[in-house]
Amino acid sequence: MRWIRDHKLISILIVVILVTTVLLIFAVDSKGVGNRSTSLVNSVVTTIEKPFIAIGEGISERAENIFNAGTLREENEKLKEENALLKAKLRANSIKQSDLRELKNLAKALNYSFVNTKNIATGDIISYDGTNWTNIFTINIGTNDGVAVNDTVVYGDMLVGRVSDVGKNWAKVTSLIDESCDASFRVVRNEKLVGVLTSAEKGELKGFMLDGKTSIIVGDKIVTTGMGLYPRGLEIGTISKVSFDSDSKLTEVNVRPSVTFSSLQKVSVIR
View 1 (cartoon, helix red, strand yellow):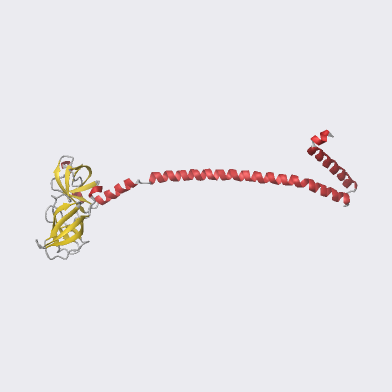
View 2 (tube, one colour; view 1 turned 90 degrees about the horizontal axis):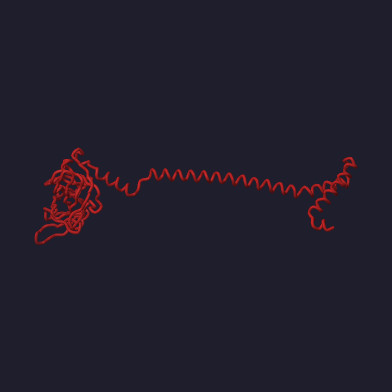
C-alpha cells in the first residue's frame, strides 16, 4: 500500500491498462458485435487518447513555433546585413556638407560666361592681412600663373577686387570693400543711370550718381560699366539706401555687395 501511495501516477496507469485489457478481451469475445462492452471500450480508449493527442499537438505546435522562430531569426539577420550594406554604400556615396559647400563654391567661382575661360586663373585664399581682415587677402597663384598687378579678381560673375601685389606663386588682393578700391557702375534696370563708388564702411559700399536727378531706387542691381580697371558687366551688388545731398546736389547711394567676403575660399583672376 505504501508503494501505491508513493507511486500514484504509475499505479493509476497500471489500473487503466488492466481495465483496458479486460475490456478489449470482452470486445474480442463478442466478435466485433456492437454492445455495451465495445462502447465502453471505445469510450475508455477515447478518454485515454485525448491527453496523449493534446500532448502531441502541443509538441507539434511548439516545434512549429521553434522552426518559425529560427526562420524569423535568419530573416532578421539577413535584413541586418542588408541594412549594414546599404548604410556602407550611403556613407561611400555621400558628400559631407563641407565638401558639398566647397563644390558649390567652386562651381560658382568657375561660372565665367562673361569672359574667355583661357584668361582665367583660379586660386585659394591662404591668408588675410590688416585689421580689416576681409579687405586685403593673399591667394596661392602669382606670376607663374600669368597674374599681374591690377588684374581683376572675381567670384563667378561677381566683382571681388583687384590684384595689388604679386609674387611668383602668390598675389595680394585688395577687395571691393577696401576704401582704396573705387569703381564706376551702371544700373541693370536702366543703363543710363550711372554712378561711382568712392568708399566703403562696415561692409557696405558708398558712392553717388552722376546725374543729380536720378530715379535709382532701393533694390536696384548694379554692375561694372567697363570704364577703368574692371571689365563690363560684373555684378557689384544691390542698392540698400538712397539719399539726396542738398549741398552737393548729388544722389548718394549705399550698396550691399553681392559677394559675401567673410566666407570666400576661392577666387579667380582675369589675366
